[in-house]
Length: 279
Ligand SMILES: [Zn+2]
Image (cartoon, rainbow, N blue to C red; front, side, top):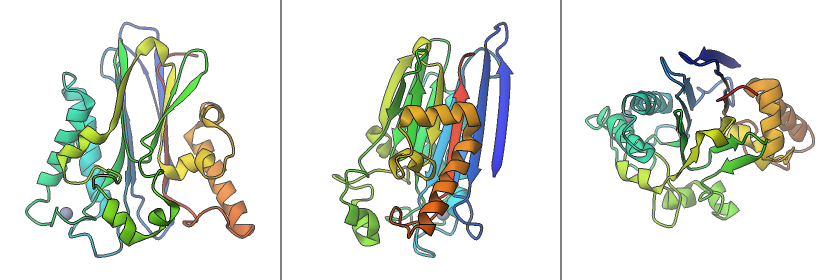
């Protein structure tokens, strides 16, 4: 498991910020298609969290000569850079511009109109001294913890509202992928940024936050091991790596019991946890 911890005391402030990232591939034979970054400030008290879950296409059928990790690195890198350099720009515009940059990088070599062109779910969070901005597109989850311990989950549940058989059928999924009435991911069309769930919360109302790809959020959403507040407690006490270990243990136990729960034994799983102020 890859783990990364960063601590930063903002210049001129005693308040410390802490962020941790952990990521596990779903299978040792396949590249991890999740991508995450936590950027803490060179000065001041702002920061950014970026979390992407690359959508896995059937082999050799996506119109692209690149790989999904190539795409998520392009998109995630652009999101991280623009969130810091363009603080004047709302997150939906940053996503739009980042999608355009990633598309420009392979417009000449690849068929970007292909329905399975490389694409990803997005969680993007940016904060400064006054506010916490968020953007969620598709089925990764964002959790915001208030100073009183209340945890709010920000979800784009369009994919979850699709009937189960749609989620299991590649053809049915393709008919709804980035289509009106279906669900939306960050692929090659910058206009999809307008479909994202966005919002702004006063900084004083956010003590800590977390972002989870669906391989990690299944601790709540698939296994029902606890609610979002319980999940946040695990992240605080055991870190993102602790949550991922718990997910893998549940998956293995479920497989031994006959595997009623899931149709993909392990998925790439990534969790980011960031404390914006001391507890
Ligand atoms: Zn390509």
